[in-house]
Amino acid sequence: MKPLLCSALLLLTFSLSAQAPVPLAHGSVPGEPHHHLKIENEYVRAYYVEVPPHEDTLLHQHDNDYLFVTLGDTEVINAVLGKPEVKLALKDGEVRFTRGGFAHVARNLSDKPFRNVTIELLKPQGAPQNICAQVAPGAGQAPCGVLQTEKRNGMEYVPQFQTDATTVYLVQLAPDAEQTTITANPGTLFVLLSGTGIQTVVKGKPEETLAVGEVMWLLAGSNTRFSNPAHKSWSYLTLSFKGSEALHKH
Image (cartoon, rainbow, N blue to C red):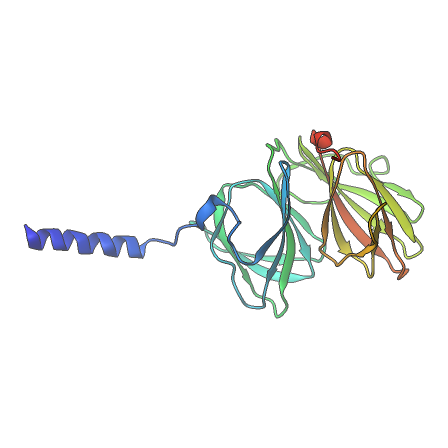
């Protein structure tokens, strides 16, 4: 019996060692060292992600639907556990939506860091719809035209994507747009995509200079002013979350 038991144990050990590695603990991206948590509330969890040239993330699990915004042109391999690897050529400022429920490794093929902002959507999203950008490949298409986009005071507002719970806008500003104010209604996530020396001007707080990839949560009903002292073109993304009016100022 002992030889049979030893053989069975050896076989079990070999079987376990031959299996693919399991996702990280916690069931989601917390714990993956390239993901740096910036904002978390009941609607969203936003990470700044940076993977050095020719390096990989650890295997990690995405339980929630999410958007990611690429910062800089790059090429990566998306290696989803149990599926063939896919090579992606991503452009600066490109936004993509992905359904959750998978584990993967992101492998940076570029000679530059792979940088993005990953935004986990913590509420059920329903059916995604592209508007003026192909954010969710294969999703439905809402109208994109003059009635959907808006230009005023050196600014252009272009709707990108929407679900039952979230709407995404790209805002592009001309060099002569020295200041702009965002009135958040409902609660809104702000992501700076491009620009030099962009500053926030919030009543009662010192001015803060933002870096590209910086994220801010703008409370429902709040007004946040941004200045552009460098007089160069800049752009940002907003994600508005239905029902987030409850996240009010204390």
